[in-house]
Length: 536
Image 1 (tube, rainbow, N blue to C red):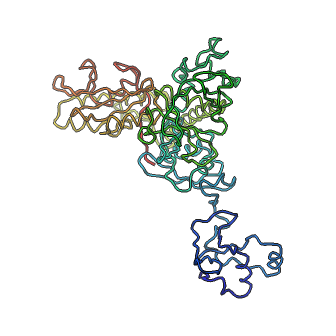
Image 2 (cartoon, rainbow, N blue to C red):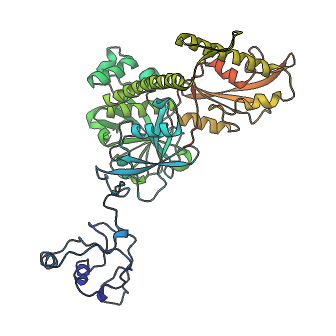
């Protein structure tokens, strides 16, 4: 039973209530408690009372009150159900937006999938984004851990960014505002380390400043290696449209990115010290891409990004919006921010993800062999005397491959035969594939590909909204999404699919994808990364 009026308490409990703040502030440690009610009428001199709130026994007192309280016998906690259990595995840390959480204990992290469903994970205070991704990969039975990532989303502000593998997830959540729709999203990001593989696409020559390194004839690949090895790097320069939230118009300004920070020129493209103004320090800076920037911020283009202090709460007044002319320029700036801020740490993250992927692949193969040896036996039924156990591992592997090829030929022949149910079967064969996205629109397909990294070879197949019984192959190439119409056709009484007016025929979409994963055909690049969605 909760005590309704502190003035009616008798005995030693009176001292406990007298130790509380008589100014009506029931919050502890100087924090403002927005849920407390002021029960004092404007015309009354009676101090306010807090109703139905737990009593803080360890409240700070003055020296006189502390001496008087210590003379009293120890009082047990009358409201144990309102306090955190002493041995609870979940640590009740500081709320969101109240600074960094405590360093010990465990925390509950809620992560959303792309199907709007979420999963709560219990992690340690020092758990990194890579650790959380590894837990989700095991939970959802995903493959290719290298490209999975945690995305920090702020839908109301249109902000999103990919957390680096070494970032602490609980510390990131501690910078979120108390009330908002902020969340973590688990999805693919193929471009997370793509600049190590194809640096030329991320650092065009015209954006590298005329520094001493460039005069030596350094290429983009040498730029990244020099940055990671020696820590020295040339400047990244270019014009961007900038807008502060307190001002509506956008202004075109020349910016320079150096290891020491981001600078802008107050006079054209001049780099004289008296014309340079420091905009932000890279050590205390996070960079976000901005979605729907034309509608939210009246941006001159869709290629908008944002910088804000990393240790402050995500507030609109701390944001500095920057807008590029195309996707290549925006990608160059955002990649350069990451490299200049983290440097060799990104290379360590990349090598660690590569090594982990190889180890997991070897473990899966070993586990598969162990399961086969323990419970399954390779058999050969080609002889007349019945089944024969295949003891040679190489013979068993070749038999497995041969059986798979035979099954594929039989399946292809069955689907190519004229049949009244052929249309149903040819339609259903690809519906279970991860790269098939049904009837999504052209704009939705482009958004899916952009969200997952805009790397060469990323693709999906969808139903055409303009042509009946046709499909569309959406493919990313050079930071742009191209669309190819897949048309059904009849040849000799059999149904096929083609993208080149019947020159190359495929019995189904699965065969079309498998062919273009090895051969480019009419495409500018082979199909490499399927654009997938995973439900948590």
